[in-house]
Length: 323
Image (cartoon, rainbow, N blue to C red; front, side, top):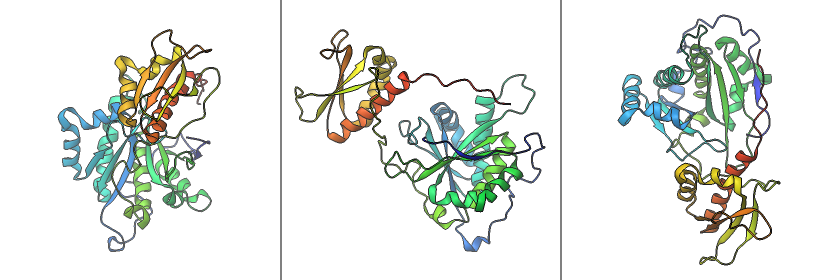
């Protein structure tokens, strides 16, 4: 999501995890009378992880809510955190209730998606917390003192993303916590305790998906036939545009059994028509993708299509080795 993360890594990765109770972090919060009794925490999950948390017929999420006494809500399956394809989970309740629910969720995800049979070392994973930009300073502390103390106490790695200015109205940042289950729970407990001291944070609670939906930015059009825009006046509605998309990229736009193009049409509210094979825009080898609807619908559909095309055009990331 833009520039490199602002992060701090533990300087003693081989040290033993902190022994303090995950639910009794330091520093201690102020008296309960000074702040509201309830708080909340939002974090990201893939569609597959969200399905695991919900469970068959909602059985798992109901069980977690019953056991923790916290409320667990998820954004809908097309409501993604801006710039990602991940849904948002919001857990609300007292600090202990929220932490109990988060631990239940992280335990299930760790066992289901990260643990491997026969693995001797304790499995490690990460959780990405959503924190308002205005509350991140309290987590970082003066000169990074607070986040460094969190890393030292929990032995987790904690990174805070830069503010993403590519999305209008985007005021949240991601706080990534990586480590073993115990390290993640301890770090999350420390972070949540700090956030719960921030009245701005506590009072900013809202729905799991607070962003205007759909929520996409329009990217620049790339070279090499990745996508070109042409004016079109032949549609039966005044607002329409035709994109030129390289034939080899049409498949990613359409998706398996038309899944992608159906989703784009449903989210944007635009009508999308793709020309037949061999029916190219004059002078090019690009298929015609015609988008019709309101200007807002066109902009959203166009951005989503070009995002698909860009992801298909981008080379895979270079392999890296971590010591």
